[in-house]
Image 1 (tube, one colour):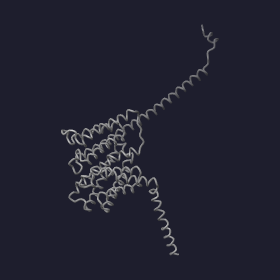
Image 2: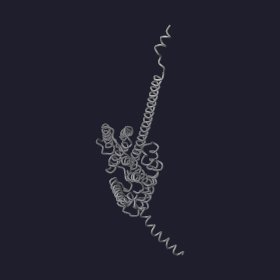
Image 3: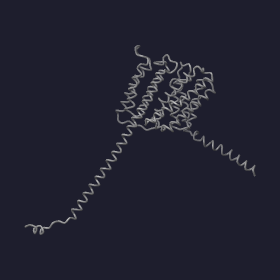
Length: 367
C-alpha cells in the first residue's frame, strides 16, 4: 500500500514537473516573443559594439553605455519575459570583448540583473512607463534606475574584471566610476525616449510644431558639433561651449511633451558618443569619461526630464481644471434653462387661471 502510494506520487511528480516547466516556458517560446528576444539580443550586441571606444585601455568600460538603456526600456515595455534576449546579447558582447566565457557569463548576469532590478523598482515606486509625466516619479526614476542600481552593477562588473585578470585592483575605483556613469548616462539618455516613443500615443497639433522641433534639433546639433566634434577654429575652447546646449534642452522641456525633451537629450548623447568613439572634443586625450562632461550630461538630462514632467503635470492639471469648469458651466446653463422653462410655464399657467374682469363690472365700479 505504501509502495504503491509512493509510486503514484513519483509518477505525478514526473508528469507534473514537465508540464509546469512547459507552462512556464510557453510564453517565451511563442514565435512573436522569440522574434522579439532575437531582435533584443542583436540590438544589444550591435549598439554595444558601436558605442565601444577602440582607444580605451579597458574595452569593457565605456563612457556612455547605451545597452543599459535598451535593457531597462525592454523590461519596462515587455516585462520580465525579455530577460533571455538581454542575457544572450550581453553574453555575446562581453565574450567578444573579454574572450572569457566565465567572465562573460558573470557580466551578462550582472547586466541583466541590473535592468531587472531597476525595472522592478521603477514599476513599484515610480509608476512604471508613466514615470515621466510627474516630477516625483521622474526623481524616483533617476534615483533608483540611474543612480542606485547602476552603482551596484558597476561594482560587480569591475570586480569580475579584476578577478579575471582584465583589470588591476589599483584601477578598481576609476573603472567603477566610469562604468557607473556610463550606465547612468545610457539609462538617462535612451530609456525615457524608448519608453515614451513605444509605450504611449502621440500626435502633432498643426504644422508649426514639427517646424519648431526641426529648428530645435538643428540648433542643438550645431552646438553639439562645436562641443563634441573637431573644432572648426583653434580659438574655440574644448568644452567651454557646453553651457550653450542648456537653452535648447530647456526649450524642449518647456515647449513640448516629455518625448521631445527625451529626444533632445538623446541627440546630445548621440553626438557625445560620436565624439567619444572618434576621440574628438573633450574626449580627445581622455581614456575615461571626463568628470565635467559626464556630470554636465547627467545633470542636463535629469533636469530636462524633470522640467518636462513638471510642465506636463501642469498642463494636465490645467486641462482637468478647464474640463471641470466646462462641466460646471454646462451644468449651470442647464439649471438656468430649467428655471427659465419653469418660470415660463408658471406664467402661462397664471395667465390661464387668473379671472378676467368683465365689462359690466367695470362700468358699475365707475362713479
